[in-house]
Image (tube, rainbow, N blue to C red; front, side, top):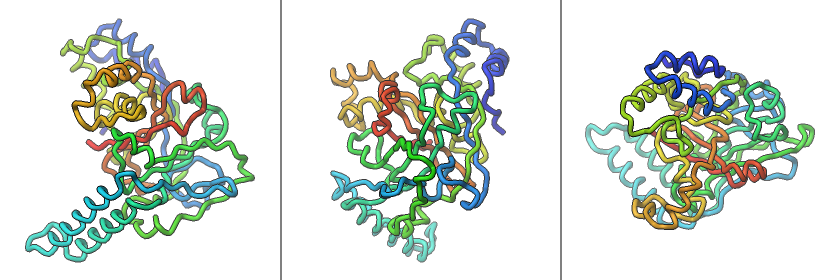
Length: 350
């Protein structure tokens, strides 16, 4: 079973001192750690969650007159549609072969979903609702990131059906991060779009579950662009720290401490900040040669400006079964300017 994340800097220091890391390195790591809020859920019905209150899943509480967010057709929608239709045909054919891992009924259902995905690529489609986070309430809890506004709510929508590639500039069509400062009295609980309900078995609609928050202190990962605790070419120090980090697990495990507001993320893959920096500046970094251009190299100097807003992992109560986890990140200057529409949502799967 994974060890719980440190609740205080003192607890973090004591834990690090159990390793063979030198005391000066321990002090560096403690100083660089970031406060955050660990978000946990409980299994409760929607009737128990008030308008505007923090939660995962269900339907969002939107200001009267605001429509459920949807993405437009993807610019490469025809190519995406063709790939899904090809996969639909493969699934149907594979399910009819002797010894198939799926029944013919399952093959027909999986193929139907792929056909629906294909149809959705070339037209506007509603985004799945991940959750809403009452910053006014959360700001009263010790550990709340002081860079975040202490008013309003963050709402996160994402194309969880398509899982748009974060290294592609056009992928930003596939999510929406909204900072809403409407009063609770002006909110109404939205109705889930029929288009999402038709594929409810494909992680597009989640069960509503309330959120509670606990202060934590998050250690920095060696792949963070702001790392300076020790030289990463020192294999002995790296292995000691990496082994220590591993005890806290990753956010894609059932029953883990998977969600957090602020702090350092526990990523499943490297390069979270770097890919965001290039894609946000119009560079498709899904090709290795894109990283070597003078423009990319210049942009990467600023990759450390990206920080975690929100981490959402596996959650059985909400029906977020994984695999993988989602990271909402934003540049420091955009966070300071409250430009949450510039945040990026990255899906990672180990």
